[in-house]
Image 1 (cartoon, rainbow over the protein chains, first blue to last red):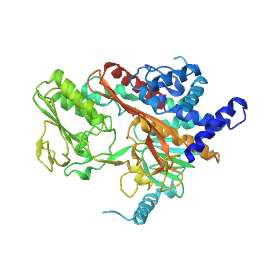
Image 2 (image 1 turned 90 degrees about the horizontal axis):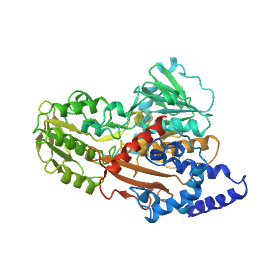
Image 3 (image 1 turned 90 degrees about the vertical axis):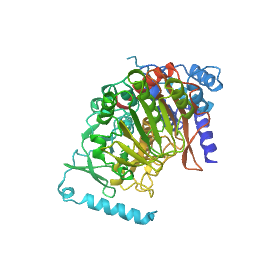
Image 4 (image 1 turned 45 degrees about the vertical axis):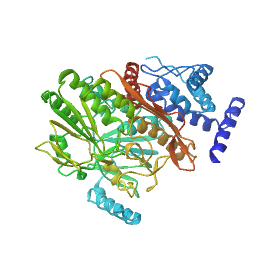
Length: 108
Length: 425
């Protein structure tokens, strides 16, 4: 039951984060940063792709979430993003979207 | 024969004691004066180099990082089979460590570790030592040459390359293929899983076949697999062999190589002896030597058990193990080593501040294989920590390409470009 407790706490903190800047900001940011960092192999450090895969840094949060949901449902075709998207929850799409939206796009 | 765990630990401790007291340990000096909290990282492949960069980046440069690596430059093992196919050279896969030093302020020491003392938290090199608050080892794999009679490290360097660490042996194997007359047989052997890069051997067969198809069409590729079946992307590789290289690639499962006649280029399996024109034995593997020096190899004598929240060794506190050396149901890939490095350093930063590490590590693995000069196939998975199993488990939705394609061939090249940039630049 620890997993559920943790996920719930993340969701609660995500909501509180938008209300009060002080609430466990570090905790939530760190988890979002950590899971987002795994995308870097194709999408570059902090989402600044250096070729091929789309730049995620600075991407609009709503657009990001919509696209991930479209990959997950299959309504947006892809080579492998349909598979990756199915591995994440909608709450994680929100976390990833917040992280990438906050990153500075660094044109090469 | 199983060695009793306590006996094994005693043996490990004895080994360290011998290694740590050759006189030099007393006389040696700290190679770099330690000013604050320090992490020493041994091994600057995909795992170690990522750990170094991300430790500096995520700690706002507050943690000292010393990176020890024996090689002068980074050479990517992923995509190195394309050197055999002829679409890349080793220099295309080579990157300097200068940016890690200059942009991120990482202390890079080119050298070899001779011993590790977990009690004194010290790494010993030939010309001095380094003390650490935490140690990360990312030693990749070493080869178990003794499992194949007649095979030694020297043999692989001089005449029968494994080419399973990208570099001089990869180039040697390419030269041997170039020198082989048309109509020759390239024989390659695959060890029983787990080994580095599960789909890599089958990709290699494709790359050699692609070269033969264009330049030596009467030649053959014979795969001797110790495993009962193709271990990764099976349908996609079989389709590539059938469609692209008809009659050229032969696959024999349950063929573990037990012996090699070096001069005769002949291998023995339990079933038969086979003579090759060009021979490539990929030997069985275990955690890199540095893991043995640290005494963190498990009772199996091969891999290292870790806590997946921090990659801290189950044997010694303050020693973290990442990459191929880790005992896990995760693929031994460069992408995975890099992803593990990030989980590990995030945890170390939290632990150094007296905080709890992220309790829900979630990572992805994306692995492309080039099945021809321009087409690739992939396997993609998300892995997340499972509390009950205390393990990283594949999440829903992972899988392989529907079919090989040129667009995935392009993405494979972009993957290499992005991951090398993420790890080293």
